[in-house]
Length: 228
Image (tube, rainbow, N blue to C red; front, side, top):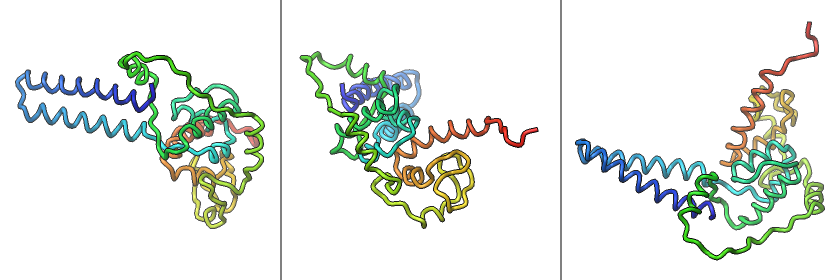
């Protein structure tokens, strides 16, 4: 079952549970207004959280090939509910296939496995149908990567000296930057790449996970040069 359909089935279960809780509150002797208010607040909160967290931007194929850090690809795979194991080629293959499948959509619904399983359990049995596979050769990936240069940023943007001079901290590790170099001296991140990336919703989510891991690594990294 597709994530959007699974969320429909899951939401139906939540609505039934929400109504049941409202009925129980009313049955316990509380006012009808309180029961109604609790049910409405719970429903609004649920819809907001689901829409905000699981209705995510589709990173186009042209941007996916710009990622050269396997950790970024793993985080992006988890955001989209894809398998996050394998080497960088396998990760990129899944993400490119996902991007091609949703190339006509700016946003797409994703869902945790338990939501999809519940939706599938509630789904009426249908005849099995084969899912078309998107062919993706290693030669195509290699050629696309060679075509992408350091001048390219997410969204097809070009690098800019003005953008670099305005930067005061690394978007990944929050280290202070001089505003001249293109690489963070503390964590080695491409400053402009991640600065542009965090302007999107999915980029913010990716950086939220990446930044936490990078900062923890820097915090506990034991310096060896000059140590006494």
